[in-house]
Length: 224
Image (cartoon, rainbow, N blue to C red; front, side):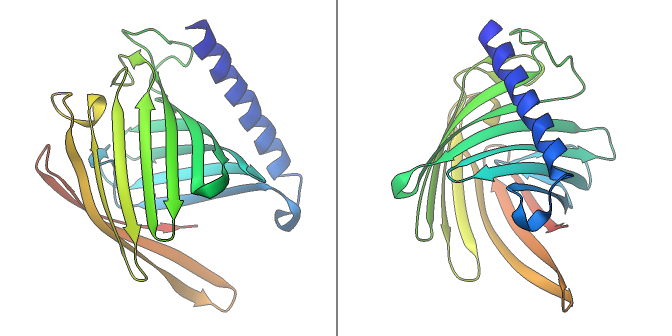
């Protein structure tokens, strides 16, 4: 777990540097960006996390093919999640990255299997035209994060002009019994609502069905 702790500290330092520069450079000339989304509920890979509306802030640094960022989700009923990530955009539409899923209700430096608060995931993606594919693999078991280690998730998505269709399957923390199953099927769409000549709000919506737990969700959100 020493390597996991070192990697986590490295991500923290990188994100703190990002925050400092965000407020010291003008937006047009800066590779740093900050924003926030507000969703009617937080549904990820076919599972709802928390209860009620979710506020999801983010900070991001982009330089060429490299991106580093921090993303979180918080609701009014106590759910908390803070994730750090790195990604590389490679030739031919391929992307490679890593994500640290962390839950602030628990000790940040707990990397144990029984009560660990972090799940570390490797992410691989491919996109061409409207097609997007992703493959994801959890490296560690963490009791409080809910990962079993070796958790897998695969998703295919195709975007048309007015909407997109997606389907995903996984095991481990993605399904009720931990066995591999389809857990995320849905349709999404987005539009931009013009408020004034200089201000518009992007709005997205999804209908998501999880056949593994037999649940249907409707999610709507907008970006600030």
